[in-house]
Every structure is written in C-alpha cells, then in structure tokens.
Image (cartoon, rainbow, N blue to C red; front, top):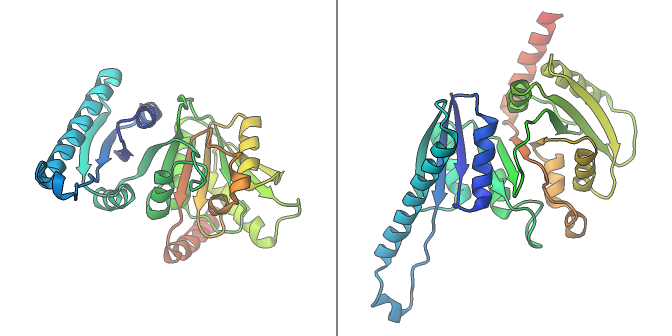
Length: 302
C-alpha cells in the first residue's frame, strides 16, 4: 500500500497534480493524504477588533479548508471510482513546507505529489516557491512536481540526470526504478558536461553500480555538452528525446542544487515543462552502510 501526500490549495493547478496522481497510480493500492494548510491574517486594527473576533476568523478559515477538502475527495471519487484508492484529509493551521515535513514523518509517506506553476518572478527558481521550499525541507521523501497545464502521459521515457560523482543507494533509486517498472519505461541516464571528457575512475565505478542497480530496466547513457546552463541543457534534451519524466537526486553539488543556484539571467529561459521527480539523499551513515551491503550483494551474484 503506497502512502502518497498531495498538498492542495483548491486551484486548478493543484487539481492538475491530483489528476496526474490518480492516473499514475491507477493500478496501485494507495492511500492519498490530501493536505490544505491555512494561515489566516488576524486583523490588528482597534477598529476591526470591535467587529471581528480573531478566533472566529480562524474557525471560519478552517471550516472553509475542511469543506474544500471534502469537495475535492468527492470530485476525485466521482471522476475515477477507483477501488484501489482510499483518501484521508488533513486541514492544518501551519506553513506548507513545515506541515509536509511533519506529515511525511508521522504517516511514513512514500511520495509527495504537488502542482507547480513554474517561474513567475525573480525570487523563484524554475518552479513555484512553495515547491522549492518543500524540496529543501523534505529530507526523507521524494517529491514529484507536476507543471501547470501538463496533461498525463504514460511515462515510458524517463531521464535521470546525474554526474556520477556520488555513490547511489538502492533506497534512493527505488522510486525511479519502481515507476520505470510500473510502465516498462526506458531510463535515459543523462550526464551534462561543460566540456566533454572521459569519466574519472570514481565516476566510472558509480556508473557501473548504477547500471547494476537498474538491472533489467532498459537504460541508456547520454553524455551532452552544457549549452547555456544545466537547466537549459536538460530542457533541450527532454524535448529532443520526448522525455515524459525527469528525475534527479538532490544533494550538495548535484544538478538539482546547481539549477537552484543558477543566475536569474540563465534560468529564466527554463520552465518546468515535464514532471520532475526530486529524490532526497540519505544520511552519510545510510550511504556507507548501503555501499557495503550492495558491494556484498554484487559479489554474491558474480
């Protein structure tokens, strides 16, 4: 049973992410946790204080949140009628990123699926600022960001962007492999280089281990020259190969981090056009243990 968290603000952008989730997991038994957070502004003016009780404002906003969640569940059930799916609703007086982090820990969430409107201002990266905050705060759970207006396409072509400088654990790769196996997808490992050169010994080792983990999942390695930025390079690659889903690990010096740090001039040309699966790294302790276990497993199969 998959436990999937979907934040919603009841916008069409949020519904689009729900729509995608229902179709992506149509053949899987899942519990979906629908989350709406609210932080009502309490009037501080002495004139307003006589007219409105601050507590009542919070109650009213909470009621609106709870009704909105129930309407959303009804809308989902009316459209999909999927016996594999069950729903829980969570209405919370909290900041979104903080609440997502708490729910992931409390309920053992496997995946967060969220809508993203894309860049709309200089203070945002290549997706909505709420999504970026969730990615930075959710250290234990992958996040799947669905672009505004993106219509579901069965993900048979998946790109995994990496530079091979870091060892991968099976736990980190499992969300990627699971989706690939669900849809018999091809994984295209894409390596962006500023100038094309041979892999180092460490990079080659990590690539070899990655290919062993992917096992019988069809996969290919693509080395591409950086165009103007990592984000633009990946966008062009995704368009040319008709990629349906882009996956990245999020760790220090990763492509994901580079994209969030790119100068505004470079990143404004990039808008998330396809779903982006952001996979968090495990603790260093988890990595070392996983490393040893995987080497033993590989040796035992040789």
